Image 1 (spheres, rainbow, N blue to C red):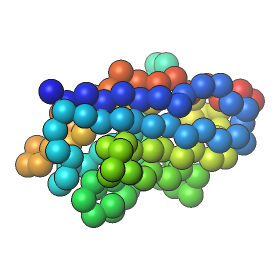
Image 2 (tube, one colour; image 1 turned 135 degrees about the horizontal axis):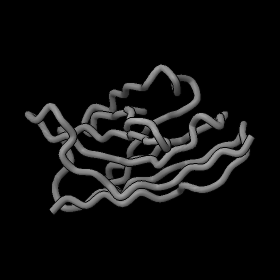
Image 3 (tube, helix red, strand yellow; image 1 turned 180 degrees about the vertical axis):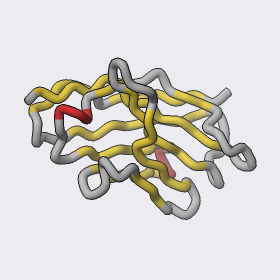
Image 4 (cartoon, helix red, strand yellow; image 1 turned 120 degrees about the vertical axis):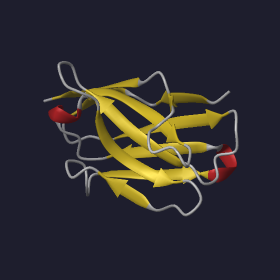
Length: 119
């Protein structure tokens, strides 16, 4: 059974940085895509970033390009989201998720970690 456990959230001032981690277990993750999503109060869940586990190719939402970096550590089965120059509008619950080919949707989700950005 796939398990995803996020950590690293917290309170930070605008302009500050946080690094989120997502520890994955329960299967082989090669060929999968790992993604980060977020949901702010009153908003729908939105895509933040994704990385292909095998090739390391990445994609980002326009709102975070140049500020956030997604990476993975294959040996630790962990995906990271480095968030720099944080803005109040980045505040949300952040979730990691896994998409297993050939599925087009993300099948497994973590419980989320809260990020709060004070202005």
